[in-house]
Image (tube, rainbow, N blue to C red; front, side, top):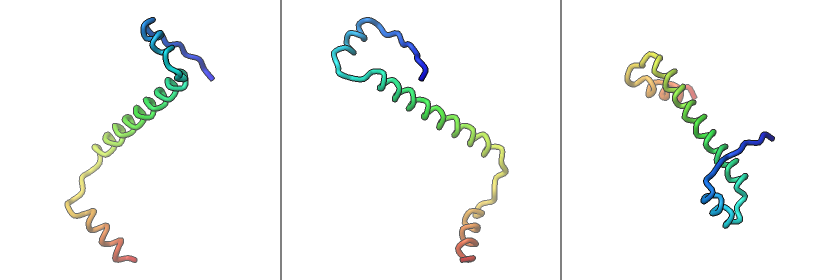
Length: 73
């Protein structure tokens, strides 16, 4: 496991000592959550880019495909 260091103001460090919280675990969870959010954001941006380059379909195309699929069963 890699090690990173974080500097916090002295006042904040004193406040952190007052609570029985595993700060390392809290920070790990926060980082994992933040990375997950960023990955989702970038994936959505990429999807929008890919979809923007497509050709639009005529109105009713999706409805027609659904009807064809239902009728084939």
